[in-house]
Length: 167
Ligand SMILES: [Zn+2]
Image (cartoon, rainbow, N blue to C red):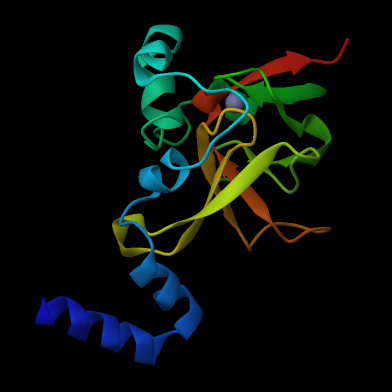
């Protein structure tokens, strides 16, 4: 496919080479990235479909993105822990949550061993995808425009999480 090669060459000249090489070598969408990995919690697609709501399934297992400002967790201000809606794994503490104004629950740091990341090449963008370290469920993306102290913004789908208030 000459047109694709040309496209890659233009990209290679315009941006750093590393990600392009990764793009050439990798699968074409982010769902395939996590699909090939194994996680402590393994379920069939059918089992996930039965367990999750339609919206939860589309985000966690199909990498969909919820409408901004649609999740009550975006406005959650109590002390507590945000856990994976797929497997209950603890993901974020309320102490690292901040209002990014994007309409998605945002954090500047995950809990230890909470998440994994992969390169997401969907929609002709290079983004860092974030998933649950225990079940591999897609949670959102992380960007480097967050507040101190990390400078990171974990932009999460509220529907992919549940909130447990502190006792
Ligand atoms: Zn999980």
